[in-house]
Amino acid sequence: MTSHTAATAPLSRDIRIGPLTVDRLGEAVSLSRQAQWPHRLEDWALVLAQSRGLAALDGERLVGTALATPFGADGATVNMVLVDESLRGRGIGRLLMDRALAAVEGREQRLIATREGLPLYEKLGFRRVGDIVQHQGPVPGVAGTDGRIAWDVEPQAIASLSPLDRMATGFDRATMLAALAAVGRVAVLRQDGTIRGFAVLRAFGRGEVVGPVVAQTTAEAKALVEAAFARCTSGFVRVDTPDPALGTWLAERGLPAVGGGVAMVRHAQPRQTSSFQTYALASQALG
Image (cartoon, rainbow, N blue to C red; front, side):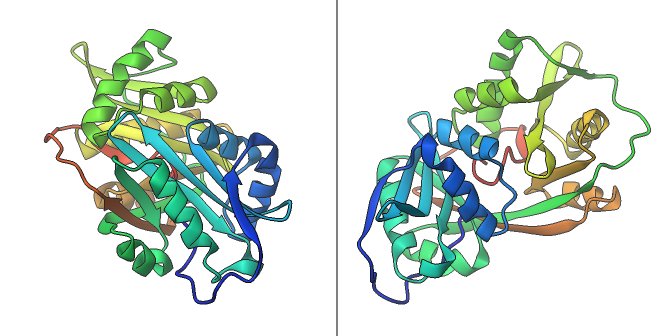
């Protein structure tokens, strides 16, 4: 998610923009805690490994970040846009956004914005395409799981999920899916020998996150999420969904809506219609 507003005052310091490197991630965690984001060092590292990271530096102090995450040659997300609370409103966020967008120019660009950031993103050419609702809380009790779902699939089977994900998202996220599978667990829903959907469960923030969830129907998405609940070990779980029907079900299962953001796109590219849909995000940074 992005967390800054349009500039209201000129820069008053000698701020320089450079690469965000792994050794700066401890400072990045501190910035995200200012914004009340739950990201751990491991969560930052996972996204940075997929991204082109930018750092705003005041002398040697990290005061802002932005990540541009390319997916193949066609798409990208812009994410983790943060500015130190003592320097907000001075144009640093706009500088970071300009550099991040330039890093993935020529691709369709997506982000999830706070409502306060909407005017700036619209000026940059983004348009609103939907809402993402964050549900989280103690892991719901599970009475049973769908027998069509299998866990811990072989590495070669992970590769077979990428085309389904691409049909759902329009982006080639094979590298990202492999990275998520390496740190989490993957559930696959098969019927009559055909894969109809999948979900990833991994550690994130205060506990665990379920996502991405890719399926052909809301009922199958619910079955995958329910199966993930049964495998949670932390006691706390989060799901970010663009699907109102899944959101209603999550609330009924005891995971209330606690926030979210606005899905936006810039330089949108034509997409083929597909029965596969994304029912839950890997994260608000990665989509």
